[in-house]
Length: 231
Image (cartoon, rainbow, N blue to C red):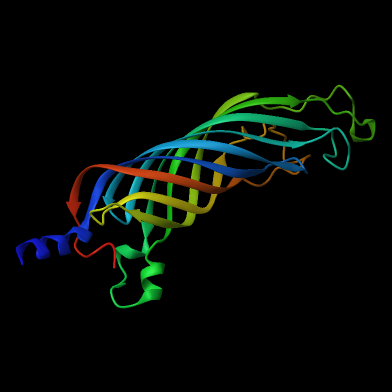
């Protein structure tokens, strides 16, 4: 009976640490008219405060771009490509931390829905077309102000779902995360244009969104949670 009782307690345990890798399909929202989709990649180190509250230090590398040399793509002929690097500290809160999922199949599935947030910095590295190319907009010598390289504060808003895979001890060892992130970037570095709002449409916070897929592998000593993680 002792061995059976011990085995029954195994599903309470989880690993404190994890590392993860992932990819995102992303698009910016900046001052230019047309924006393009790209892929970015990330890696992270994770501390599991509980099985349902991971806290991650994440690095990202990706590309954002927009505009073009025709009026349909941008009225002034602005065009940028930003090969950025970002660092984020963020945490997620999964519903399993607070809901009772022991006697309901639906609640047992909903326990892995998560939302979260954090903060970080984006290091922008832009290649830009900086001069007006259409005479009806003004002199062709007009240079659009801004910086090619800059660092901006960013706030991510996260939402998604975690799929867990368990090892032979019924402890979650591998996870697949699917979700959506919307990043608010404060400053004008994302597209590199800092146009005066009195002349140009430049009155919204720069942003970029990511549709992401990530894989996490948990490791380290296992610790007990207050209720079974797997039913």
